Length: 367
Image 1 (cartoon, one colour):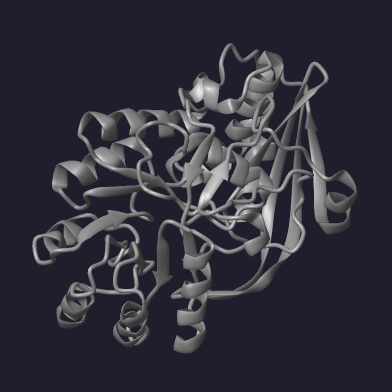
Image 2 (image 1 turned 60 degrees about the horizontal axis):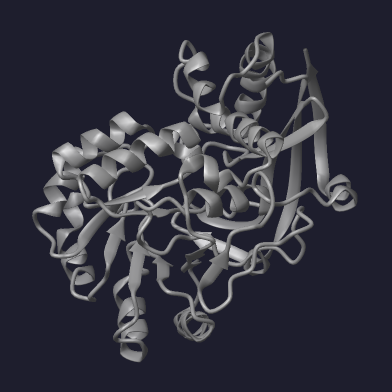
């Protein structure tokens, strides 16, 4: 497989409604859309880094610099036998998994399209549909309860609520009062510390499936200590940035549930390694989301067909996030079940006219 050129495009899409977490409130999405072209075939990937380093250290300006100056030129310097080899070629440049993933995803998609097979086939996924949940931002309690009711009625198989100190116990009590039996999880996005054990013990009483990333975004030792003090299972997100970090977390017993975000862990080859590790240890996995456009969302759907992804993920209907997406085929769930896009590769194509309308910048790196 010979890569002829790489296109780096920044698009901006407004959200249907503001999304508030412990990081703050977001009203729209800046997304890096990467296109690789090989022998007349295109493949697409998405970078999930933010304009500024809020979630992890990476940001869009830094990713563009590395993609144009390092990763893309190296990729085009020699042929690709298989997408699984790509990220290993960039090992001399440390870290930056989201930037590497954006380009690697496009290579996987292009390769699958050239082979005429769905991406899930290359990943060993067999399902043609996956269960999905909904992730809800922070809103006033009556609005939150109404939103939970709406998503339960729509059939979503898990509801995840964002929390932070001061926005946790009262809100959870109100939700559990109306919905005592639903599969409910919370995501703290690193908003708590071990000094808040009284508060964490209160959260522990609400029959949650798991608590996601309650402590520092790069910690595992404190999470391992916390796990011995709670009955609710712990799930790590921000702390898991590679297969090696996942193995370390499991060895330390810092978590018993693994949230996989392909951009955070460094690409689909890393996902495959994490998947095999978790399956071997009987550790449940689920696919997290970063409010992706239809490109990243389609990749998430395909990877979640792998057998180790046993819990409902965050890849809900695109219409929950955007009134209009950048893909011609917009993933939509019915009764909490998301169909895998049909066709070769990730099964979606760009809505070219709309993409041009929402593009803020575009550049092409050629061989």
